[in-house]
Image (cartoon, rainbow, N blue to C red; front, side):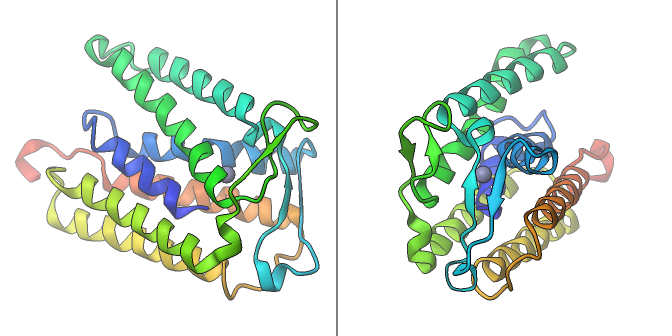
Length: 223
Ligand SMILES: [Zn+2]
């Protein structure tokens, strides 16, 4: 899941508009940033199976990024980081920390819905969780599309952003949705796990940067 996490970040960003929503979108994608970094470092692995062209599901071994205990730890770390980073906004610190932690953990909740039972509770040898909605890909993609449209609508309503920024943000999110659907249906198998990791990290960086840039607060006079 990719664009669904962006929807969760946008929805959480609609709760606290004094922080750039790009930060919450990045938090909602943190576990995948960890995953793909760990794949490049050889700490976690992704295997492209022979039936990938039909299922579009790699096989993941990712206890440090997507295990339940790991996700709780990453959420706590993100909350602590947000608390430290918002030192200049004392009235908001606890709220921003809790929202950042919620954004990180939302990733695990959404992933457990779509992945096959391959998300460990704590460590690679523990019980595996996953409701396997990706086995019904059309339903999974409909849920993901609904999520991101809902997140986008929640965010742009009362966002105070100029109209052209709102239109650009909506276009960016919808293009990302189209790429997500294509990636899970018609895309050919990636050449390697390393290539998939590198492409994913670059895509996440570009999309988060664009969302953060579009959502930045201009001076009140130009809104
Ligand atoms: Zn993930």
